[in-house]
Amino acid sequence: MNYFQQFGIEASFDIDLQQLSSSYQTLQKSVHPDKFAHASEQDQRIAVQKSAHINDAYQTLKNPLLRAEYILKERGVDMPNEQHTFGDTSFLMHQMELREMLEDIKHASDIDQALLEAQRVFSSEYLELSQAMRAEIIENTEASNSAACDNLRKLKFYQKLNVEMERLEESLFDD
Image 1: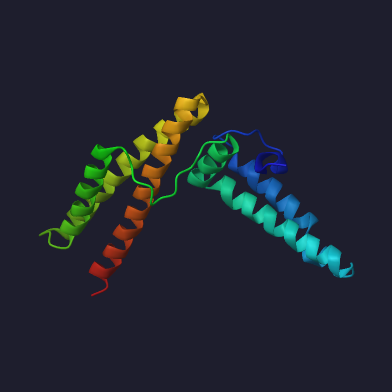
Image 2: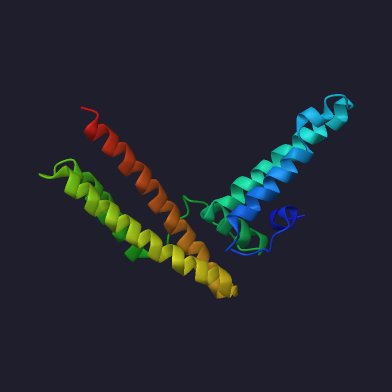
């Protein structure tokens, strides 16, 4: 049973997060350890395993990037690891520019403005890639799934970049 079936929702990139949450709570209640306190050791172990599986499925489906990755894997798309190099040299060059933008924040005369500008750029580009990936997943052809996979990898880069920016912001304002 795949994750979508487990929660009784349609296998789609666009899901009802409230329905997912409600199904999650219902499923977790059904395998809660308290219900198996007087059961055999084997039944207790099975309940714990089911609970862990339900939790993994929930964490995957509630996060758009993890959900996209799961959908693509379910479709049999070969997901290269993150160390695998991109064939998209223009994106590699853009990555370098974005990292330089992040580095330049430390030396900006107006750090607040530099941070806001970087956040605006990162958010705008993330949203654009996210919308493209969503459309490609919905299209569900071999070519669109491959393109969605590439955009997913790019989105993971932006996610890491945002974490780096948060760390930078904390270090700059901790003084």
